[in-house]
Amino acid sequence: MFKKIYQEIRKHNKIIIIRHKSPDYDAYGSQLGLYYALKNAFPHKLILVDGDDNNHNIFKKAMDMVTVADYKDSLVFLVDQSSENMLVNDYYKYADKIVILDHHENEGDFADIAIIKKDYSSASELVTEFLVETKIPITKEAANCLFIGIAGDSNRFLYKGTTSNTFKMAAILYDSGADIVDDYNIMQREESESDKRFKGYILSNFKIKDRVAYIYISKEERERFNAGDCFASRGTINLLSGIEGVDAFVNFTEMDDSIVSCEFRSKSIPILDVAKYYNGGGHALACGARIPLGYDYIEVVDKLNEIIRG
Ligand SMILES: [Mn+2]
Image (cartoon, rainbow, N blue to C red):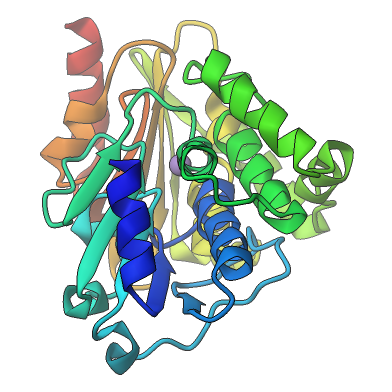
């Protein structure tokens, strides 16, 4: 499969690398790691990165302004995502070929070639393996991006998806010049006073129903603490981890477009079916969905309790 993808790279002069919207470190890391490696290996090809931006972009590369015309005749790489409803636009439909390198629980059947490793720590781990297997050199810049992606999604080699392969790939990135101490320092940014107080607000105001902890963050509260929607939801969800007697937790955040984003996490019981019930997706223990503003979100909490009770 990797060989087939390599042949597609050789055949195309335009390569566009995309990932899911509201990018996290792995989305950026896998996208930009692949970008730097391909740019170095194929200097005569046009290589572009597309997508929305947020404060997880601690990398030096800004997104390109990519148009529909750019997508025509291109090879599109979709990394860290394989569901069509998590993308910023549908321009990829104009591509000549679509390749997916992902680790989410989706099928990705709209792609020409999809490699989805559900048991991998991160898309960055898979992209690293792809580069190693196809002998595309991993530059120092690529190595730092990919290392940050792996460290981000595995929470520094702490989560369940961390395997011997994760360490093997990390070792290769280290040998390719990733500055691990520097990468960790970049990830460990200082935060603003309002961000810190917002976290305090969540810790003081979450509720527990049966075995599920939850917090509902309205737009007014976000504005009061000047918290962006991505930070308010994904950026704070783990504050609710580690509560005695709680098996799963959820963050409901009102977004800017009359939608409430739901971020689900679970200690050990798979809860992906709840996310899927609300047309969302993700991983067995970490997933998300969206519900309309005004929807009875306690129903979602109840669904989580139901699945936990088995
Ligand atoms: Mn990921």
